[in-house]
Length: 519
Picture 1 (spheres, helix red, strand yellow):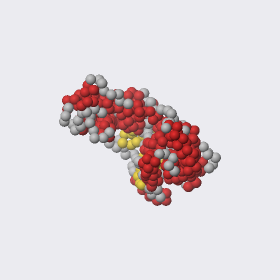
Picture 2: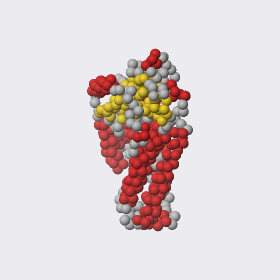
Picture 3: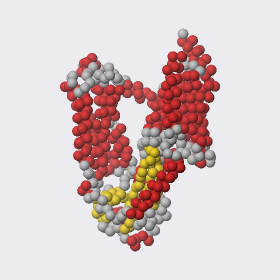
Picture 4: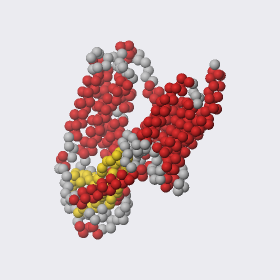
């Protein structure tokens, strides 16, 4: 508990100010920009991903230099306290956004669906007269793969039922109001394709029975499904209907609880989670001591300049010896960000969207779309996929780009990436494949060849040979568990290794000449 007053003044008080200001500012901007002004952004991004990610910015700028005044056993301690501060801010912010959406949503009472277009658009509607048509149902069967290592296979069925004023309106040839119902179940993605098909059939039969037994007329009010992935899937189901013309389809979700209960306990949980976060951070601050020398410098405004953030950002700026690698990382990140902004998701993307953007898929690639062999190497299936790949590229690029130079390094990256894509369509008949991992494995294969043939100094080679073998072996083993394109991994690794064997002699001479000139 050494220096408690200084901890409260220098760290805890700024943390409280940052937390309260961030939650208030973000909630206001959410209301002003996305609810009031109606800027079309996916709700998941506004409700979860931005509140989760944005707190890192003020923490890094204002709180991080103060946390670094504390004494930790290792460097991870400082990061841990920064991460804890971000989580303490993110959780109540996320809950507050859920409350904001339900609390600001108005309930409009109308006699029938035809009056909805004649009233002010709101989030909730109460219908006096309506008829749910179970005969012209729109259905979409789909599946997604999620999880840190694509371990989960999510079976989904989206059902949309037309809503009319009365049964006589079912003779109409055009309609735009639908009641949506989503059915879902999660199984392991490590099952074989046949096992997945069998389980999907059982799932579909169970949900068909549940659908037939459901009384869709029994609801208290309707909620408009917003700009979400579910709404996109309902639209894809509805688009199959011949009676649908235009894109102005409105899909509702039935709510059975009283309208007054729509907020639940979100407000209480907002303040409760905030209080828990404040208390937890206070308790954690009691344990570490200050680095006295750094503390005195900070108080006297003579603290050493913090360059770690700048050094981290340097990885994204092309410079000598790390030019092509940074450009490749930036392109991959920009493509990922573009797909997120397009509304395809964040944690994971659907196969259909990946195909539209250039994923590798044998039936399409071999049908003349050979450009997919390259474009898929700049795409990723989700957040964890791109983070893992960019980390792997960053590590190997630091060593190989200075050795090879910009042109040879880029040529090897693209060549092994394309060969990895070829291996994928040779092995799989109908698998959607994306990711830079084939090209990255190509670089690791090349790196492995240079290490085995002792292109690098002996001390360097021994240290990194083992770590490279562990990295490659672990990723290949994980690929055999399912959900990962191991054919592309092996194709990239083998092609890179062969190219490395062919070039190692020349590179070794180059390194020796360079070493002699330095002496």
